[in-house]
Length: 347
Image (cartoon, rainbow, N blue to C red; front, side, top):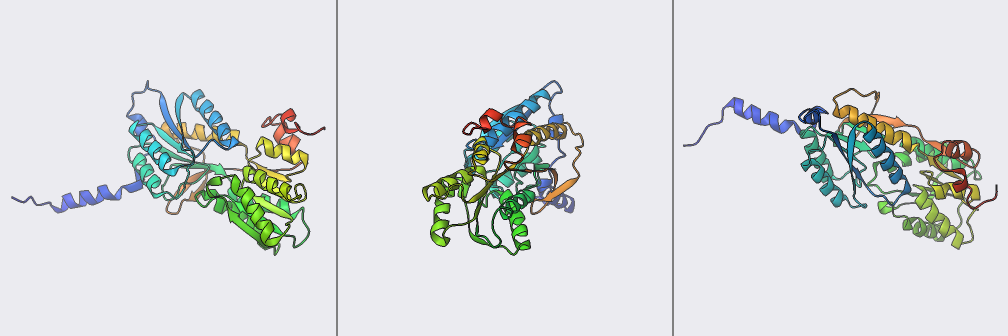
């Protein structure tokens, strides 16, 4: 005989389906653990090819350890499929939180997995890059629009009026790139300045900086400035300029304050890098992650829309670094030591 489902049963099914990404309250999963068990955090990185991510990892892990948490670090090596497998693994391990630097912030499979994690009561944190439509519990990053603003203002301060400016940005898979571009464009538009060339480096692959710089020189000739999405792309762009006997003659800007970028600044090959106090970012992210696991409120007053949801946003301010302030900002803070920064020059 066929069973009939009453109105109450149908309503219950609809409510279950409607829960979606809302999930359980942050920290609810942790409450199911016995109190004596150590907090478990899974941290998924895009890659460790870039110097900065190693710094983020070290500070985050150290801070979390000091707070009584253990961190399981995963590296996707730039592969979004691999990163999804790592997230699945962390969900199966029933970690208390997943902190993720997304390879592809718009990856639908990643979004669905993180929704599943939230369903299981796992805290989910977008680290540096905001994962789209996933309703993560927190987004911790820098003001990336301001990063673009600082870049554009730096090059305009160094070139003639209506000088030729090119740009080599990062990939669309990184949500921060669109924010950086909006900052750049706002400044350029305000000064009636247009880009003579622009391109995007897929996967943040450094070699594209070399290829696109050469392409730019062939298409439009010598330029006055190149805005580079990060310092690795800036290094490749400078290599291409060197082959064309233009190194040191073109205003180059980047971001991350890598040691090689700081060396290039004092050597005169790169004008500016955007320094982002990574220690502060990683430390704050670790502290807030542990607080969320413990069910505590966090002191975050801003929000960033991920395409569907307004996500609490812990926003840190970036700093433009040039030859004029590199000692004060980089050396005095011991982000890099003085003998490293001035390795190739006589002071």
